[in-house]
Length: 385
Length: 50
Image 1 (cartoon, chains in turn blue, purple):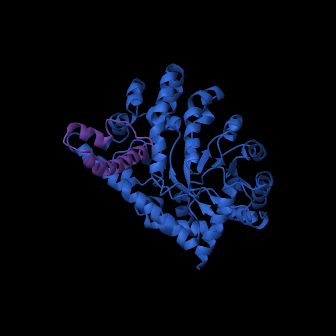
Image 2 (cartoon, rainbow over the protein chains, first blue to last red):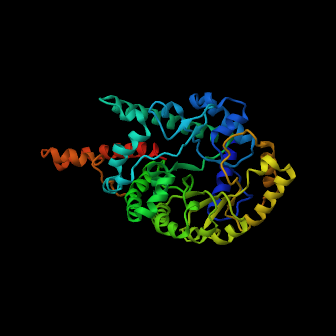
Image 3 (spheres, chains in turn yellow, green):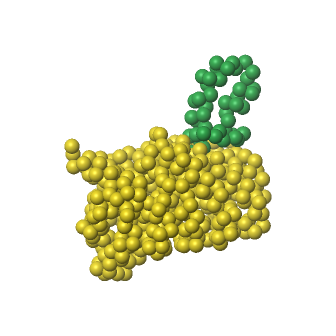
């Protein structure tokens, strides 16, 4: 058996035990980052890499190996080759090639009724042409551009999945997320109504917001199932970043977000999937909700007190995240290690814990990744059960 | 798994409604490939909006 295969098997067992709320041989370490930081780390040019994914294929395994991680997310890179070809308004590259997501509104408040009646048709007729100007061309050109986008999407997705397999085969790092979906309220807010639009809608037309989430629910559930590779498994998980809750008050969360979100998560876990939630922002007022979700959920926490998180949700949810990446910028190596020491003392007891950062590391600039290596080495040396 | 009801999906259903000559045996042969295409399209459209 090759070293990479032996490492892959060891790491999968380590991760699976933690996800099952058991104690592995030691605390697993997860790489929460996009490919961009690996490209920076390897001294490659980001803009070139987003057009030439061979650079991503070369960079990611080096980064994972040097950072001594046990697992990673599937490579997720918004490729400008697709987005520029279809006239994207919602994802645009900056000067050095990093994709930005401006505040955009793809659906008018007056179109709620149409969305509720036939969400897919409304996404195609109303939202796509606003977010992707190349679809809104006269004659056959709009259709041709739609096909161009679909072909690019299939091509880039295939290459990125090949890069995942390459990382597992060469450096033994398992990829523990498969596909990505959103909660219905986040899907409605992010690119249909926008942050500002949804904030107003919750006051002006609350019933329509509720009905829109209900109308979107079957699409997101079906997508979660049909975009997953193969039959349901514990690992890899379905990844779900959660965007809006930290901007909602508890009453709004309970009324607009929680009903379709909790049903989506509980339905997917009931079907045999693991769902990994990226709990963005501070959810300290909402831990009781999270603790009431059915098992087979992993929570990546951006903020919060690890001790409280463990007490409130640790009985049913595998806990990840929370390590402040800002420390890698401003603290000494010893101070960075001290933070990790406290965090694992609070999060690791009893198992069900995976070490990672609270934020996804986007770029290498400004961060001292040698400190991250030192922190990970500390977890490897002192995180044994 | 629940079928998504949409004028722009449910292709087979719309097609069959316009072609009364389609038999139950035809439907069994044709419906599955239509469904596969629907899920690919659903995935493509939703992926552009997250």
